[in-house]
Amino acid sequence: MIPVLRNCFVYFEMSVMTPQQPLSNTNPAAAAATMMMPASLATLSIGLSTLEMPLNTLVGAWKGSVGLCTTGQILSAGQWSSPLDPSLSSYGDGATVGCLACVNDNTAFETWDGVMVTASITFNVNGTVISPPSSSSAAGGMEWGATGGFPPQ
Image 1 (cartoon, one colour):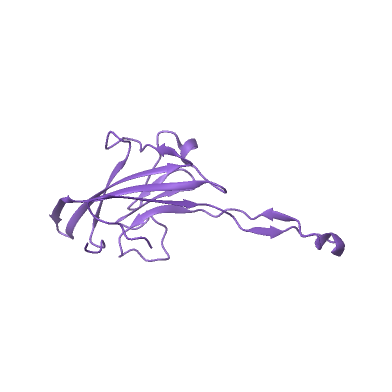
Image 2 (spheres, rainbow, N blue to C red):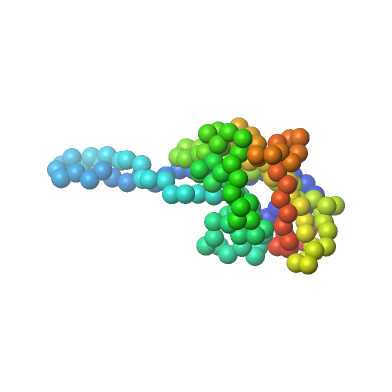
């Protein structure tokens, strides 16, 4: 868990690497050579959430969370959306996914569920910025609202 500071930009990156598993071989002498092959990659989602999201939930599936999945789709509060070019946003073994976030206290407003704080999120895969289907800002990022969960700074 990485805390996101308020009223400033925070950037983090994660590199995706699959574990290696030995090839099965009937010849014991050849098996001792330990040839390795990559394991299959599970579905991943890299992103942000509020503290209320359970740890066993895919990021983006819970309200107050947003994530970029290995399929290249953005999942935000349980709603799927495809970026302008999903082939550039899908990722797998060896990829590096970055996330730039800015939680802006100046945009906070009162709702029935509590105070809503808007965050601006921009994802990139291997240095290529991922543009949402309808860009909410000139920089190609997306606006995302979340209630609570951000620790006071």
